[in-house]
Image 1 (cartoon, rainbow, N blue to C red):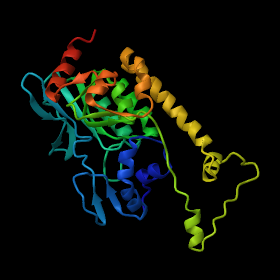
Image 2: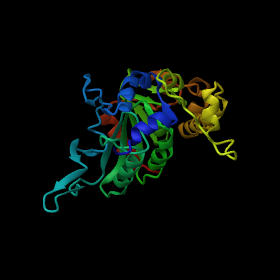
Image 3: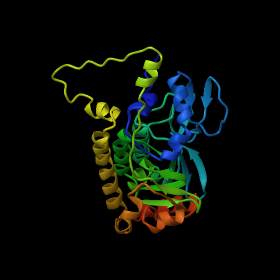
Length: 312
């Protein structure tokens, strides 16, 4: 059986994730632990040996918009001569690239092909290096993701050679806010969109009672020198969460400082409103500085092109 990066991240990772989304999907995590093939695709609501519960057909499949005409071009095309997928060489100059980030963001790619933070960052780098690209629009609809993926994703956005604009189309929570704050500007699609949940948490399961009930006695034996090995985890099993809380605090301090600095004076002034993990509707997100405004995608694309032409 191949190593499952997604399940490993779920079971042992620190998460910058909207907790309501996480709890709603807990049954899927249990199925993953049973060896079922699970994809977090909201388009399907049935349960079977293969569960497809996540829609990521746009993720990792960027496209370009020619601003003057509104015509769409695929970023990649199939070359029948080489039988390979290659960058589209027929994209008009000064087009705006559009890349969607949907669902939970893990550091590595998922087992069903959904791109992780490293792959997303690589795609942003590829788009920003193309001569036809004037700017990039990141379409965000995500509950957040794995804390270990934050650095790769945020650095990928910041290192782009072309302006990157964030566009929230649904939910932009936790790690999604960290990513959006790395963008030059951020817009939400309509008043029903949500942003926030700036914070971090983790969870773990204590199977000791279950194992003993089933006649299994677990023994853990450490070398006498290894007094601090897994100490935070062992303390947490005994009800002392302070070690893990301190680790989570480091994540959140960095998270809050980044958002406050990157989003500017309005976000800094209202930090006490958003730094506790609260979610906000679109108008409130704009009011406290997490977003610049509310506008449809075609206007955001025009705005991105404008920023590219007025970089100074």
